[in-house]
Every structure is written in structure tokens, then in C-alpha cells.
Length: 252
Image (cartoon, rainbow, N blue to C red):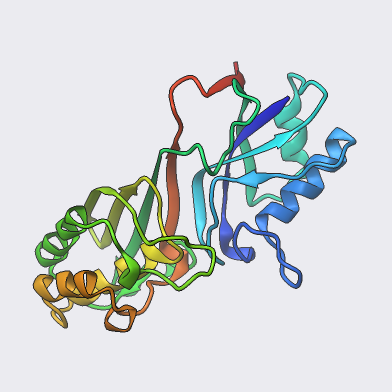
């Protein structure tokens, strides 16, 4: 049986999702704890990579297991997992080849940043020292919906066959001293959200104009974009799958 788990995690202590040789990653922890609880070797496939220090409010993974996950599965696995990783929901896949990564049709990220010094945001939000021009940042963010090739706003990766992404939503909001950027796409390139956010911050500071931001995208020149926003402000917020692909079994 192919099972999907919906989890959430605080990424501060981890080197992202993907298992690495010399660093602790979320995937490694899930593989170890699920294998221990279920008494079988379990290998999890995640819905995507997250960078070192990035958090997830909603993340999906799948794994295969020949047995049945019983009613107390969530409580038991959460007692095995460290305090900064939690399983929230369990699903059965309705298709044997359902894949947490390849079947996802939409992903949403949120980036949180504090304006000025805020000790309570350390580890959970980026920081911008002065109030930016949110109107200009939104004007530039709207440009993202006009394009599909974001080579200039992503890290180079040999795994990427192309740099195409369909951004369907990009919005800046402010709540008191907190800035919130929400972006939705069918897929995100490596490092894309943090580079987009970091470059939009430069628009807000007046260092580049929305028109210059558009030129960066059109010219496909990564060297013209700005640095990535700090990882601690980024959260994978939501992932969507085709209707009927997953059947929730716990909680009932």
C-alpha cells in the first residue's frame, strides 16, 4: 500500500529535506523513525526539496508499506519523532504509482520578514531594517505572472531540465511590523522563492525599479538578480494534488 503523510516541521536544526552524507535532514529522520515504528525498511519520497533552515506548515511525503497503519499510528510516530517534526494526517493513495513530488499540481510558499529589530522573530522571519515601498514590491511581484521562464531567479542545478514555472499568485501584505509575501506556482525552481523575495526587497528599498526587475527576468541573467532572502523566513505553506488521488484515513 502506498501511504501519504502530511507533516509540518521547524527547519532550523536541519539541512533541508533531502538526506545528506554529512548533515542531518528531515528525510533521514522520517526514514529512521518510520522504519523503527513499522518494523520494516521505509524510504520516504517528499513533495520537494526545502533548503537548510526553511520551515514547512504543510509538507507531503509518500512511502510504501505492506501492512496496515493502525488508529494510533499518528500518536505513536509523533512520540518517536523529535519535537520539531510532527505528522498531522495520513492518507491512502488511490493509485499505486501516486507520487508526492510529481503529482503535486500546486505549491504555495509564504515569506515572513520583520521591519526593524524584533527579537521574537529570530529564526522564524527574515529582517529588513527600514520600511520598504510595498506598492513598488507588489508592482514588481505582479510581473511574475506575465512570464514562465525564471532562469534569472533561480540557482543553477544539473537536475533542472528547464526553468519553466507558472506563477498564479504573488502578493505582499503588511501586518504591523511584519511583511508577508505569498507566492503560488505549479512548480518552483531551486532557490527560486528566496531569490525572488530577496530581489523584491531591493525593489522595496529603491535600488531597482519594477521595470528593471522585469528586465532581469527577460534577460535570463542570474548575475543581475540579487541575493536570496534568509532561509528562516520561508515556509512551505500548502501543496495541492488532483481531486481523488488521496483518501484521508487519520484523523477520521
